[in-house]
Image 1 (tube, rainbow, N blue to C red):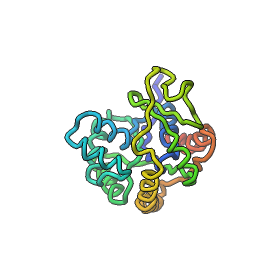
Image 2: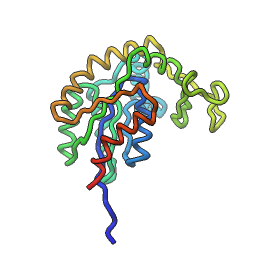
Image 3: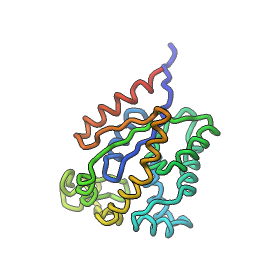
Image 4: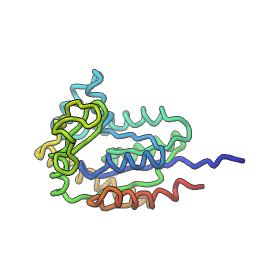
Length: 226
């Protein structure tokens, strides 16, 4: 009996800081086995790895600013090329500008690939502020908590390892305001770019996690079938 082969899903996940991209990304990975390519995670790894650009990237992130189009595209290209044949991917935090979107299309054409769906999570700014300023992180694993919405069993201690939790240096209200302004100014044209391609869907992220994923799954499920 022949084994059913499901085509890989290639998607982009868009949303401002605190919109729940990390949570929904984990759900998508578990369901569809795609490779998660998150620029934020890759940049934080670069900062701690002693990379030659570590200081430059850290300074940019501490200010709540975004990296250049050229650096972003270079990081994504390097990781896409490493993917095994037939493995799907999810871009998170990229593209942020129309220039990046155009360069991505050019890159995917070169490697005989394409984007299947673009999902945008929408959450009101006041909710984002509450989510971001209370966020806690276990640096070694990337596991996240929240002081109000998802507190650890022991304050500032990881439930699994017992190691200390930290707050990201860019998880302040001041840095968030800078990031939100840049996000909306830069991302609106990106959304329009993908709308014209018929790929964009906006989803309300200010709901219970399961409800949000149910809608995401309804969108992606037909793409994972022959």
